[in-house]
Length: 377
Ligand SMILES: *Cc1c(COP(=O)(O)O)cnc(C)c1O
Image (cartoon, rainbow, N blue to C red):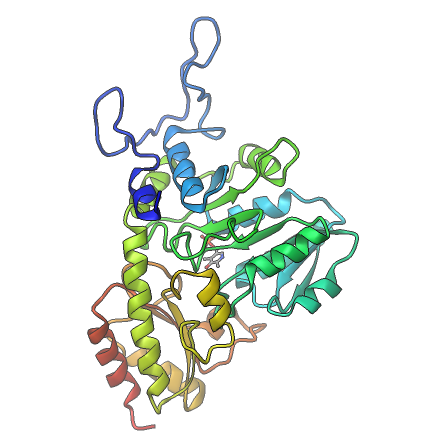
């Protein structure tokens, strides 16, 4: 089935007990046993399983074409569970331009638990090959990347990883399964911050891990145990909200992509803009790979403002339709001076603004950017 159909129907059978068409929200933390001690529904206790959470897991599993999924309380909790499935002394290869939370988790937290990481340029297979050691137990990808929209060739990296018997995970948050099916491309695991496009309304925090293989000795079966033992589970209401957001994901993504394409083309021609980072632009270094592995180029873009950091701040101060806030993937457009969010260690140019292009009319967004850029500097 196509993704629009899966998004509508997966995890959404009418409730057998009541006929309710919208999926019920099960807040219960505990489930009754039969007189013989068995649990007829399969549910026991909220941390180990909940029907609303299960509906979300089944839906995202189906969208990604995986065999199982485990939902978490945030994207970082999902990524943490993948890393906690490794052992002290293991080695991880991660992108230089990892989401800053992921890089910080690896450097500041997990290094103390002797999980060592090499950060490499994921667009350079030779660098990845060189970084592999006998201790390498995971290769991480994230594409398009944050905030420079670099494109990693998922199939090529997955091939390289598998030649060395190493599993790989792709953070598919920016692309979503509506644009990029990273498990089909060869990744063993997909992770998401469902806070972003899957939720889609800036009103719920969540994460999920989807697996291509959930055998007893797989990384995923350990992740499932960490979900229960570690307890970083989402609330049933959070799962319900994310599931509600997913129903319209494929159609929202079409509009996000179309709007971002229009804005990128406009900014690319504007004299007040130094450089635009959007994989849909033919001059983008990852354009050909993105065209191959994504069905559209996404709703995120970044651009460098001519005139440096002050000029970038001025543009962000003058826009009316773009909210100055972090995060991405919701219906409203957001603009952000990324370097100041990432802190002093950031390698992001200080004249760069990142935009999460929302679902407003593109003509209105372009007019707003035009008046904000036309400061005469
Ligand atoms: C936001 C984000 C995360 C972290 O997700 P949270 O829900 O904020 O914990 C991880 N990866 C990417 C690519 C993100 O954009």
